[in-house]
Length: 621
Image (tube, rainbow, N blue to C red; front, side, top):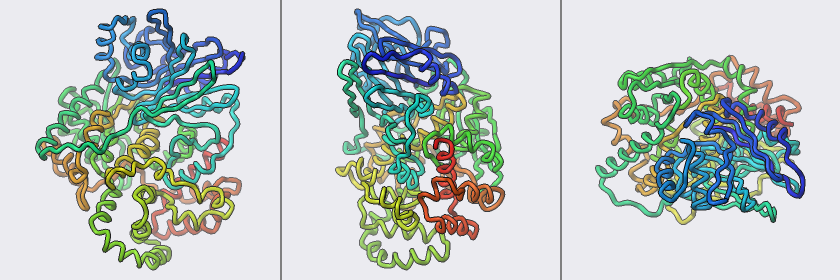
């Protein structure tokens, strides 16, 4: 894991070493083991290294490679898990290597296959290659956006980095992207290619760019998407076997490391499954979990149950409300875009404490998206099964909506949103099922000025949805193209790399994801059950109390904190006069939102998103 930076100046402007070193310093936390700079003819590349494979100086970056008179230079962040097989194949074609790194393999693969090299890589990565001979810049992100790549482009220069803070230190003008803010308030994150800053963009996952340094032409192309149409007709026992084999291979690939390695263990199905499969290949796994004082949010006893079963070296860390006060400013600064997934705090602290013991940790991310684990999936199934009846019930929606506002009832709120979306398109429905502030609520909360700016724009889910798929496969496809790359992977990357910890996610192995896309959705989720076939496969690995217990989710007890010890703090941050929140929302609506939370309605996620937005605004504007 590493941090990458770069500047290209058009015309005859030189790039100075101090400019790249300034960017490197801004993201030093991503790679504390080594730093490097490369300058050539208007191109500057920077790198901070967290050494994982080949800890010698032979892994220093930016790294150059020359073959048959052609020279290329790379700055790279990530891991290519199949690099050893690729290395052997390239050696058979005449390439030679001086290190044991996957970095050198990427360079040789690019020289052999050009941009099609991306199809060869199984891993997580963001890199930029400077092709000295051809005078082009080639940059790419992995299939699911595990590793970030952000950029700024104008008529004078192109700037890129792993993180926004390195771009912003280059004198780029800071302006708020209000369309991005609108999406953030619904989703809790900013969907790509937006960042919250006008003119600064994320390269979307599964995409690459080419910048021609002769013509200054900049193009972006997609190189991968999940295929949900080619279904496999397998018996249940066959599915169990192929899933088990595929996960075993995915875990094995992610155990290659020259530094200490462990695993996150929440006690949920997905992280427990990863520990179970690791135990087949590693003795005495180091596992790490977070505990909370509030029983409804504390899964640590489940984690201990799995740790005892597999005899892991288990460590437990406690998170309290004081930690939010202690880390909230640095947390918002590290996440740099508007971001409010409430699990960012425990993920950050878990990474911080885990890094004291290991340098690499495996996680259970993407189990829900692969196998149908969320409640929102069951809502889609319910509507699909009883659509005519639910259409009739939708007549009562105005009364239910009226009641939910007066009774401050969370269930009535969810039912009201559900009934309002029964005639909507699948992408629009899923957008609101995923929401913090749903589209219907925002209309009433926004000031008229802000509403005029943002309310009549195309829903981002509508823009990327594959309408040729069935309703349920559309939903899975949407989550792998929005929630996974722009929320889950952002959270894990920024929280872990802020602490120089590498996190690997076996359930995001693209071969496994491709296989799960070929599974009929009925084997994943029903109206009552979730992760149906996955849990059946795990019965030989995990006890019933782990597989079939209530799903908690990796979040913090914000609703309790905001009613008790953090009540005054939350109110102060949300209602500050010069904050962005009161420029967007009607003041009386915000006051009611805070009041209703104290009266029993769970508005904690809304409050947290408004707090994070105001702190982000204060830090940047």
